[in-house]
Length: 266
Ligand code: JCQ
Image (cartoon, rainbow, N blue to C red; front, side):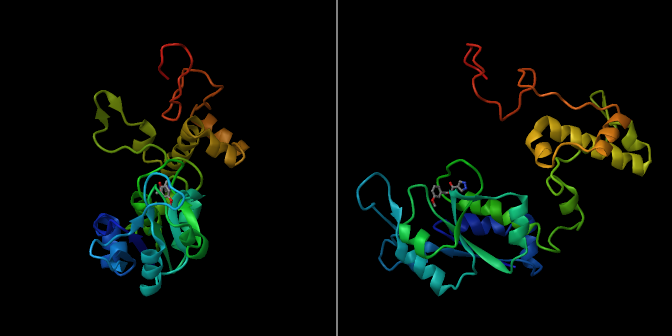
């Protein structure tokens, strides 16, 4: 699979792609990441890629010329996506769709903007990694590279582990434990040391359901709530679903708004 990235910070992206899992995948010929320096398509001595916006306003806009030239001269694989918060949001389902392609390309824009003709006449769509604004598309492109790269057949050491973990079935992972069996007085759950593999599998499933209900109730809702067999699984291990009626006792990282109690804190 080939993934091309067009950027004004090629070292950032190619260093990243040469490390760890993606680097190994490339050494093994499973993945071909090609990073293109937008400035290589410039002709002036300053290697200029941006200019001030027509109509006025602050900041600079990436000019169309070097982007079109790079895309055409390097015949980058399609579809070509512009990284930016206005696009379809990356999730695991989209990562799987992208991993099934022969290739695709990512154009790293910048927050000031990209000439409108790039959007209307060159790219196939915009791709977001979340509802926040980055200074440039590079970090977003690296997120896509890693999420997609690890799904390319043969890339992950253990073929099953990519499938067993979070989101492959819309649930968070169960907790994992390793030695020591007791750490600072906290013991590893007995069931994991029982040797009863079927019971271990049921316990993992049950705790995964509870953890998801507690931390990501939206994911439980998306799969239509819990089935009767799943509720029986919880009962087997005396687990109860957390009630989350908006009380202030359970707070998560996504509950950062002032709760209105007057102390100015969440
Ligand atoms: C990507 N989530 C955030 C920022 C505009 C192309 O236009 C823009 C590009 C960027 C850089 O990408 C992101 C981003 N996914 O900020 C603003």
